[in-house]
Image (cartoon, rainbow, N blue to C red):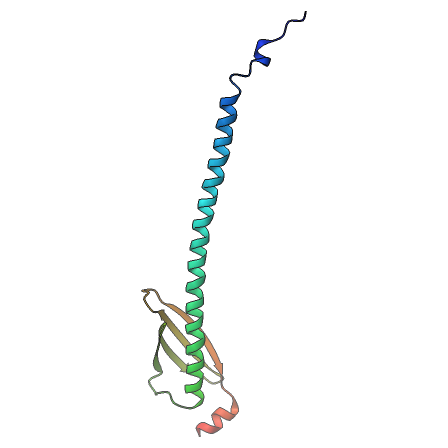
Amino acid sequence: MKKQWSSIHNQAGFFLPTVLLVITVVFIMISASIIRYKNELHVAHQLINYVEIETLFQISLTAFKNDYYNHLLDENNHIYYNFPNGHVAVDWKEQEEFTQVLFIITPAGKDSSSSFTYRIPIQKSDIENID
């Protein structure tokens, strides 16, 4: 009869490393899922903030264009718009071919602000109406 190696057929020490490996893999997967969830929350908050700021920019740009083309703006080159979801300060400077407009946007309930620069082209009909 052939002699068999007892270490090959003795499987008493096989279960502990297998269980530790499975537990380690499960722990890594759970940790990665938690980290990915936190990252998705951060991205979602940033996207919501971006949409709020972009909405305020579009609303204030439309209001400014209406005031600009209807000649309802003061000569101090500064106007302040209050909207339900934030405040927008607008400064502008008229140049020969365009009007440079600076929007400083502060969403409601937040301390930070964002600024955008926009150029409005001046048409010949606008210049003729001013004279």
